[in-house]
Length: 140
Image: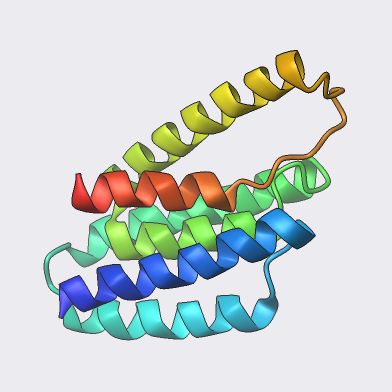
């Protein structure tokens, strides 16, 4: 059952990545479906304790606060996804995921600043990096 949950999350992250790359937003309907699925899987998958799941979700809640304070420098959709991933993966693996995704995003941004002459106001969708990092955390 837990492997099904991993594939469910991966598919939704892939869809969200494409949408985020094109529109720079994640549809609420997609977030609601993913929330329902992760909630159901979290009830049935006992591979992670409830405390690790709650701590992972709390990390996402903290990012909502950061989103509000920074006027969405980190988007609300990204925060919501990280909350869901925290519930799915638990605190330790979601921290690994965030580190890997952030590192990839920084490398990509530096490359594009150098090659494409981006300015500092350019935005970068974060969900594609979360998706790649999810592959590494789950299947690596």
